[in-house]
Image (cartoon, rainbow, N blue to C red; front, side, top):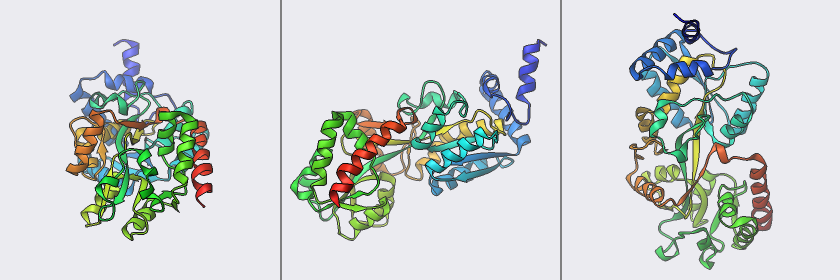
Length: 360
């Protein structure tokens, strides 16, 4: 046996590779035939015994996915650390620079995964075979991150109090006099500011924000609180709500409707593999699982928008609207690649200056 082959095999069967770069390990895994690759990963994961997930995802999504993974691989204990996006990044950054390699996989939003991939050395490049059926919009070419689900950002309105001709289709429609005093927005910066800037530039985006602030906006902190205002009839519409939240309320009989504005924001939740996973076999097994057809169907059952081709959202109405905006390319993706903290800060300043301060 050649020395290089022996070293690759020895490296592959290490119980952990926390002190070394996983590049060679990942390459050796992906060279194996699919069935053999999966079997090796399962056997290695059983020896490791557990996998540690760092996540900022919602509890329902975490519970659904971890339960299914545990049923599929019962001998691999799955643990997780759930924190808010910025806090999760700070913990991961601090552990990395302190030489503590505890995470096997990151599963979080753009504001967490974006900074992680920019922090040199934290994230490994990994081209999982499962990525092949995921559209290019929802993954990077280098393999630093892969999307797992989209939060579809919608405008929500009171179905019984907003006439059909006043339902907005574009952001500019919200400047109609009908909406004056009837719109609620968040006190925290919204995701839609970026859309306005990218579509029309900073000057015109600022002008739109100023005009919108003249609509006597209701400033309310939190998406749940704004939905409650709608249900109480204290506002008739609100921006920047995740579609799955609305669908859940509709099933309970809430008189709410939603529209996917042109363009619609798709906010990605992605996975990324650390450069030093303490349980490498289990880490890859979980990575593959999240974007596999089985894992994606589990996420879709929770009214999430899966990224994998061939897997549909559970709610048929939402699934149809989602397919339409994708087919017509009427969307923008918030992904780790286009998350720039300095630019994000400019978006936030524009929002606070023109929406929050002028509306109080």
